[in-house]
Length: 197
Image (cartoon, rainbow, N blue to C red):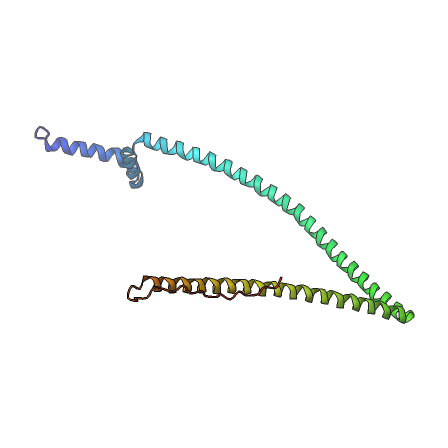
């Protein structure tokens, strides 16, 4: 720097100013930034962006195809659904019509043949009473079985508790050395519950 005179420095600055005289300030700024950025990095960014663009285009094509296929399937399913709902409503109307006709036929039969119709009702009532009695019998059998199970469990508990009391009393009378008389053998009667089979 010491070898360069002020006149030569002024000459180089004037040359630089003359070079940029034809450009505007933003163009000069952009050219300065372009000189700072590495061109290889810019090329790799552009390549990766192109690759991502191709991938996105393929994905968009796949989504368009999927949407078209879904729309076609939806139209088919919608038509089938409409047909099925129409069929169900028609079947309901037919069933209502059938039940109405059956009621009319029953009314006509009851008017034309009242004795036979009443006999038929009586037989139905008899069958209903028989079914009710059978159900009551089955329920009473189940209740009896439950009561027997409860009696068995109560008998087992009482027998185990009485045997425990008996063994405790024997062990106490045998283990007590204070009494001078020899221990007597006592027999205890355990009541047995009578069971009905």
